[in-house]
Length: 149
Image 1: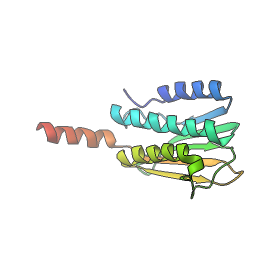
Image 2: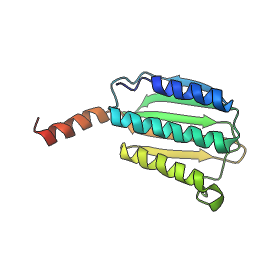
Image 3: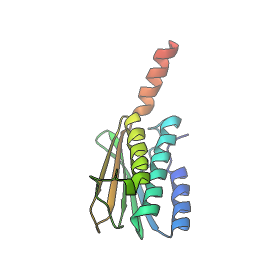
Image 4: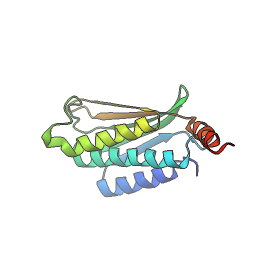
């Protein structure tokens, strides 16, 4: 199943209806770039980001961009919420957010990617996930090596 933004679109529609946060989506089709296991991890990264936004951001708008960039796919999630101190998300008062950010970071690294979060008080938050787009080829080569194919 290609990453068609189909399940992301349903996740975003459900999120917008449930949270009352307006969602704008700008994306390119990425049909051949990720295998099934990666798609599930990408979905979970989105899910965690949206959960954090709904619970903590006090945002009214969300902008999501999915683009190919320099041999990678960039997923950018930006909100207009209250922002937070990126240097201290691990405090006791935000332990739940820290777990979510940690899970997002771990999943991103498992995909060979990089997670960047920028935020400032009153200025919203930007979550950027960059993942190599040729993971399908790498996965197929790995399976071929393992099976002797």
